[in-house]
Length: 368
Ligand SMILES: Nc1ncnc2c1ncn2[C@@H]1O[C@H](COP(=O)(O)OP(=O)(O)O)[C@@H](O)[C@H]1O
Ligand SMILES: [Mg+2]
Image (cartoon, rainbow, N blue to C red; front, side, top):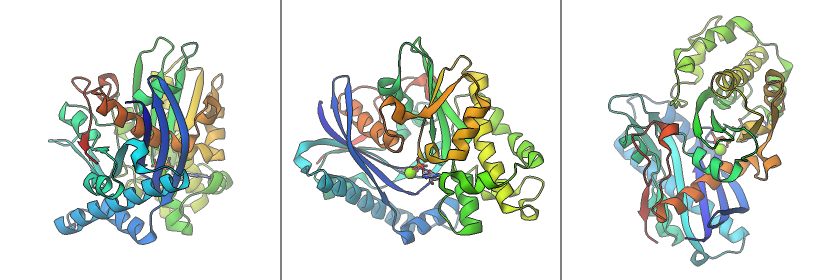
């Protein structure tokens, strides 16, 4: 249905909830406004513990976290409506991704788990909410991720050139927008998550602004090579991963031991790891790419952007802003767009991206 939609997501960086207000009209897409509501420090800390935890988690705490996140997502949507002077009655629907706390597409049986109770979001906002987008794709044998490529194809493709969209969130993924319109997309490995965890542990900062710290260090080649040998990285797509794989524990399994190294050099090496894994995937699966459009928080990391450009001679490396969409709001916009797909009874996944047996309408509808 044409009209205004709100998209909500918090990615694997767990930096906060992105909320985007968009207008959708048949094939037209317009981003009207967007904001990020950082998680309250206690909630962020709780989330990091849950994401890192083994079996010490109780059902009570998980269920309560689901509700608390639903409240936080609802508040983010309401804050955006207040700022844009819109009333809930003007919004067709919210598309809420929720917060991933576990993504295990390779387990048997596979699963992915996003929290942020959509019942709470619909009740607090009075807006029909579409949520739980990923599990239908998993039920059809897919990875459940990435889901944004179908949206990227709808709004960022250009039939006159071969573009790739690189979303650098906690995890990085690529969407290959070939000029002949065949679509693929997959995760390439770590995005910002390892860099964030490292600077948090060593300097107490949430992230390395502009990649300045990484830029001050020296890449440790043996550590980089050891990390690049991780078998997941050479697996062919479709594939997806999460911070349950690429985390500080994973970093510590490699040699030379990070505890013996200069922290700034490890930061440089982690930044290089993100660039190199992305470039390796591009070389293997996207030869002929003319333009790399970067979105997600990684687009603000100057060191990373410079390394991508240096490793990709002949490819124009720029932010999605240069294609008309601010890099911070691409993912939230995608879930607003996916909500509209669901309400229209149109598929949201692409089997060529996720490996699902077929395309499917995604998610569940929680009426206003
Ligand atoms: N100015 C900046 N300089 C360097 N990195 C940044 C900057 N702004 C954001 N980031 C990185 O982007 C991350 C957030 O990116 P985001 O796309 O929201 O990821 P996710 O989808 O996983 O939440 C931050 O945790 C940080 O690592
Ligand atoms: Mg984020």
